Amino acid sequence: MSMAERVLMKGNEAIAEAAIAAGCRHFFGYPITPQTEVAAYMSKRMPKIGGIYLQGESEVASINMVLGAGAAGVRVMTSTSSPGISLMAEGISYIAGSDVPCLIVNVQRGGPGLGGIQPSQADYCQATKASGHGDFHMLVFAPSTVQEMVDLVAGAFELGDKYRMPAMILSDGMLGQMMEPVTLPEPRDMRDDKEWAARGHDGKRAHNVINSLYINPQELESLVKARYEKYAVIVENEQRAEEYLADDADIIVVAFGASSRVSRSAVDMARKSGIKAGLVRPITLWPFPEKFLAKHAGHAKTFLSVEMSMGQMVDDVRLAIKCSRPVEFYGRTGGVIPTPKEVYDAIVRINGGGQR
Amino acid sequence: MFPLERRVTVVCGHYGVGKTNLSINLAIDSARQGESPVLVDMDVVNPYFRSADYSRWLSEKGVRVVGPNFANTNLDTPSMPGEVAGAIDEGERVIIDAGGDDAGATVIGTYASRISAADPDVLYVVNRYRSLTTRPEEAVQILREIEGASRLKATAIANNSHLKQRTEESTILGSLPFADAVSDATGLPIRLTAVPRALNLFNNVRNIYPVDVYVRAPWE
Image (cartoon, rainbow over all chains, first blue to last red; front, side):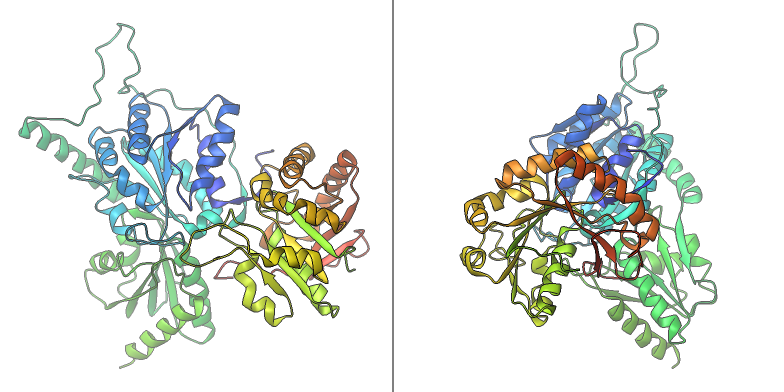
């Protein structure tokens, strides 16, 4: 397949092919709907390009294989859906505590528990605040199209390597299963210059240690603090969001991923009926793009967080604008996708309230 | 043009080439001709974007949908109902929407002798822009896998090449040499070239079949 031409891909396939193009040759995972196409695709492609596809006996095993491969300095990824991330939580924390970069894909489904297999965004808090025990963050990217899935996979690997930390693509069952035309990037060579990696030193240098166990509390505290200084740099430099009709908006809808597609249609409907609505679509969920929201707090009368959950990002919106404006919420959960009309109706309700 | 030449038509192909949208178009056109079509959703593999999702809407249009037992319910039991056999044997016009690839077509194998007895049309749907089947030899390889799993032989090719919302006249025209190559390699005729109704290509494309887009994302 020529890389420059447009092809139709499912989101899940696009993730896999984009990772290969970004130089990833190691995939460890365990199948779960609705992300199984990622693993299935990798199982077919990796053997043909000299890569490794390995189905672990569980998510727990798979994420620890990711830790091992990442510690050796190669580009490595895993992919799962919501319950699988819960199982991987310990390993993700170990990876963050070992300063090892990797890509983790979560194609979210309805929860809690075994939940359902339809799309959801109810893992927002888990991804951005509590993907494992201890003090740490990971980079979290939220694509909203299949093309953006491709672009963000490359970006997630790059930033993960740059900051030596895990990065997550937070997708959902809708984006994973739907097809759109995409243009794939030219394949890149793997970076092979990670001086910290534990991959053999041939007796020519001191050996590198990849570890997250520190019995001495002062040493552990100083490591965590150093990591948080790095996080502060990331918060300053890596926030990303898309603004749509936001500059003159009275009502700013905030939505990411699949719900942002719905919200964009709703904003268009609102504009047609004379309501000045706009959209701010977070592309990075951690760091949360608070700058992109704060800049609109002056002119916007109300913010509306639209999510496929019971309301998880809404508090981050409130914090981003320091509660200077009312922040409303509209959401569906359990695998239900809101319709553009539902979100439009919520905008209309808020618009009426704003006139009081 | 009305491309249904036999009483029973099987629609098979690679995942995501557009089998369900084509099947719905065929069923709707059959109903418009005054027939009583049955659309059999045989996809027990992938629970997303399948004919059974459109059951109620299709029944209002005069299309009876027979789908997997318990589709879209809390019971995760992939099985087909008994009425499939009756539909194949006796339906006035039967369109069978297979699941993708050989895995999806395996269920059809269960009904292969029944379907064969009806002397069916087996349309192999190709899309020149669908990842992993953009080269004719890839499309032929997947056809052989599907034929093995379904225990049916394809009788014709349905060129359903498209790029979803970015489908233009050049998209269709660019797919014709690909479809011809698949046809040459397999010896199968091209029964139809599906073209969005809005595009006027009647002078450029043989066996043109105007289609509507029914399978959409919730925000479209």
